[in-house]
Amino acid sequence: MTKQRSKTPITIFDVAALAGVSRGTVDRVVYKRGRVSQKTIDKVQKAISQLGYTANPNASSLALKREYTFACLIPEFRPGEYWEKIFDGFRDGVKALSHYNIKLDFHLYDQTDTESYRRCSDEILRTRPMGVITNAVFKEEVVAFAQRLEEAGIPYAFVDNKIDDLDYLLYYGVDPYKSGALGAFLLTTRCEVQDIALIRLIRDRKHKADPNAPRRHGFLDYIKETFPQCRIHTLFIHPEQPDQAYATLERFFREHPEVKHLAMTNSRIFLIDDYLRRNPDPERIVVGFDDLDRNLASLSNGHIEYLVTRHIPLQSFQALTAFAECVIKGTKPQRRNNYVHMDILHRRNLDNY
Image (tube, helix red, strand yellow):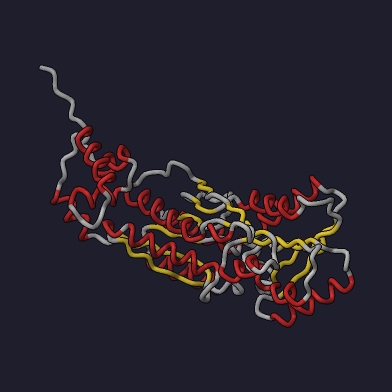
């Protein structure tokens, strides 16, 4: 007598994959939790019918009783800063994963202090979360933390930037090298460029923090390949000392009045807005990155020409939801490196963004 082979049970994840929606959406349709559009309900019900899925209320109840704890290690921030938008995206991700009872513990470190990063990473390892999401500011410290996570069997992911050589599960953010090259392209489209002022930030006391290095390399490589005769003048300003920043710019342009092209490859082009406003030059072209409110104001006022950006909270939202799904299910992501779409903002398309 031939023994009949047992079939693998159809799960809610199978339904979600066929319907092209999240596991949480299927859960809301099946158990009538929350609001779902009729179009989505129809797609889910069609997938349920095709697969022959049968809900297991006992399994659902057990899942709802369990709490999944993840840790998020990102820089401290003030209202209106870049990392506040990343923080908002993570919080939205927690809400979207409510069916999992996700708990996300935030650990905020000082970007000017490597010891602050070490203290936060030590605390995370003591709590032993299911997974960790972080960014890469201090390379040496991030590598050491990643190695300790791997030894402890804790998966980790990167958001916003990453270190390629590490064994991270996934990454969400722009392709930094390409975004830098795009910024250089926008800066130099109007004419042959002889000089560029590249303005950088004084970050930490030991000069170990350089999170924008890949973007800056993309910018510089494009200039070197396209305008090999172009001179790059690098200026350093302190983000917490506006008077010093103004004096540095004033001194430089008094000595180099021929320089008409400016760029900053970090998210804080607004730091030079005061100088641009008080020293207008119709020939000047300025390019920055990221759609912070103060950057958008500078763009709207015509002080800068272009912003290369992306929907900032979306990358942290997607990073958390994809990472948590993979860790809880014990699966690998469809793509390890997930590069979000880059947008080009100009004052003429700003109203529609």
